[in-house]
Length: 106
Image (tube, rainbow, N blue to C red):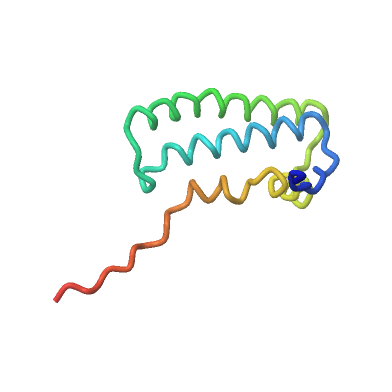
């Protein structure tokens, strides 16, 4: 059985690719910190520590884009890249989960 074939990534500059990678890394850390998903404090602490370096890498990727004269974020292209890289699921970990349906208390 062959592995599933994923759609190709859109053409990105190296700086755009770094920006997308760093953005997804920050999303992953935020998802690990999200208190609505439970977990233990040590894992959340480690994710928060990694978040600081991830945010700095994200800043550096954006600074490089700006220095190279890339003054616009091409939303459609970057969104397509994020979708190919499972960005919707990863971003979903940052959101609040739906409420649990509980019977009303009388």
